[in-house]
Amino acid sequence: VEELQRDVEAAEGRARASEGQRVQEEQRRQTLMDDHRRRMEELRRASAAEIDLLSHSRAQAAEVLKQRVEVLEMRLEDEQRAAAETLLDLTGRVREYEEAIDELEREKESQIDAARREAVRESLQTHKQVSAEHARCRPLM
Image (cartoon, rainbow, N blue to C red; front, top):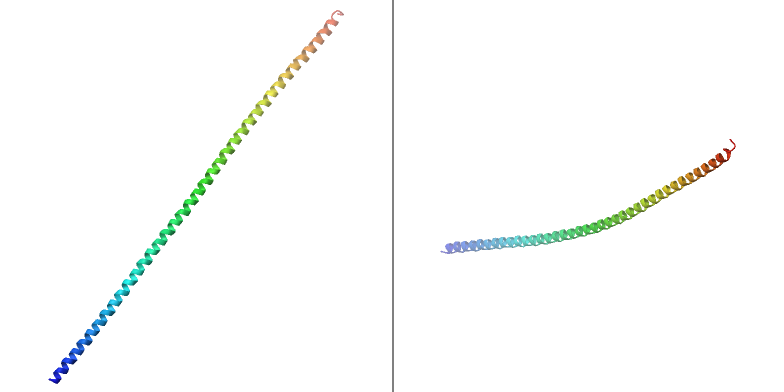
């Protein structure tokens, strides 16, 4: 009976030890699962933070590009305005030059007309002198 009792106690001891091991293994497994969940949560938060950071960086880059486009558009408008002003200025100058050329041509025509009148007047004067000389010489003939 004693031996049987010792065997029962030994079996109970082994069962308690086995139960202890099972409890320890369950606790270890639970600890590992908790660690795994914690790491996964940390990774999820880190990924969310990285996504937020990337979204923020993308938004900043988009804003910088938008500002650059606005600056380029303003420069283009300024250059177009300056080109239009230059074109108007050049058009005005061309008109002035054309008017000056027209005035010079009118002046030249006027001088040519004056020279022709003078030539005609001189020719008439010469003709009168020749006629007068001819008339004076005629009675002698």
